[in-house]
Amino acid sequence: MIGMLFVMLFLVGILPTKAHAEGWVQEENGSWYYLNQAGEKAKETWIGNYYVDENGVWIEGKTQAKNEWISSGGRWWYRHSDGGYTRSGWEQINGTWYYFDGAGWMETGWLNVGGTWYYLNGSGAMATGWLKEGQNWYWLAPSGAMAVGWADAWGTWYYMGGNGVMLSGWQFVGGAWYYLDPANGAMATGWLKDGQSWYWLNGSGAMGIGWLFVNGSWYWSDNSGCLRTGWNQIGANYYYLDPTSCVMHIGWIDDEGTWYYCDGSGAMGTGWQFVNGSWYCFSDAGKMLVGEQIIEGVAYRPLRNAASPLAVLITAIGVSYLLQNVALLIWGADTKSFSNVISLPSLKLAGGSIVITGVTIVTIIGGILIMAGLMLFISKTKTGQAMLAVSEDKGAAQLMGINVNKTISITFAIGSGLAAIAGVLLCSAYPSLTPYTGAMPGIKAFVAAVFGGIGSIPGAFIGGVVLGILEIFGKAYISSQMADAIVFGVLIVVLVVKPTGILGKNIQEKV
Image (cartoon, rainbow, N blue to C red; front, side):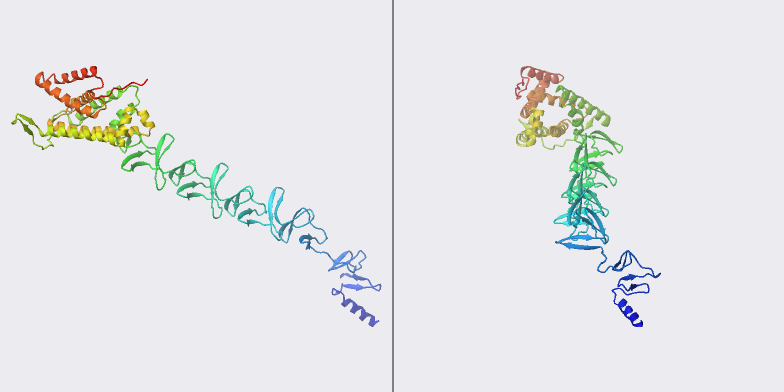
């Protein structure tokens, strides 16, 4: 009996699992059972890797299934402990997501599930974050879904095309332009220099167009988004944008020696402007006018397109009286003495019976030289040719690319300069100076131009000489008081007989 006990203990010791107090027991019929601590048989359960049936009997050869990857024919599937497997869906295995097709095979590569693309790497694991495939970058959300359109990747915005590829450079999205760094695709904001041009990208990355208020300063960009510099017409006004900083300028501007003024809104001033307690006059082009420029810009320029040319003539007479009375207000009506600036001695002829003063000699020689210089200027320079074209037809001259306003302003400047020379010569000959000194000579200069032929420089010179001779002879042989009347009477006769003057051209009217 004792021997049989030792044999039983020996047999129990050779079982795969070590027997415990509540462990394995073999009955006389040879069947094995498992007794728990209460001494009861375990039924329909696994004891380690061994299975006991409903009667508690160990079923030899039956082993417990487990969750595991199975490779077959170069593909993988995943077997559950109950022998089943996943088909047509996702399964998370050990914290990683996998996708299995309808037959239960694990998928790899790009996969479209419900209209959304995913990427499964070589191990079948679902990828997230950045993915580089070839030369292209993709962004996969934490859910694994491939991003299309705008994507926030760890706090930085990127834009993905319809195929999920990360884009770079300038992109037009939703009616606005955006700039994506060519190096990493990140959306840019703030100031951007692309080539030689500057752009402003707001907080959303959209490129600014039109007026931009940035850090307390105004900027302006055209429809391309490029910030403009220099003078620009925006709407009905001109604005000056700094060539270096692109900032809109306010106040005085010295542009290549010409002064302009931009008001508080940045708009270029024209006409009369009250600046810092003083009045200034600006042309239509914004240039600050001085002296004769003010007269030309205010009194004459607005009348260039008048219905009748007489408007300009009437204005000229009005301006002459205006200047005359302004001189009266400033200097008064008292006669002023003028010092002769010509020191050339007089020329005596016929034993001194004929004396030609130095002023007269200088006047004649100066007149000839000025006439020759003007003729060369008109015939040999572009500005002179532009003057001729404007005098013939302002409209046609403008169509040819001639700046009519500039040309007329230059003409006024030349005329004012020559008038100053004539004034010096006149006052040297007649040193008594009053506000009325130049009134009659100015009218006679006009008469001389009409007498000689309007538009003819030699004609004006000849007309002046003839007019002077007539005046001298009238004073000498008729009456000094009638001299002016004689001059104007001769003018009337000339206009009746030859309306174009001595050297004037006959102009055929266009029909």
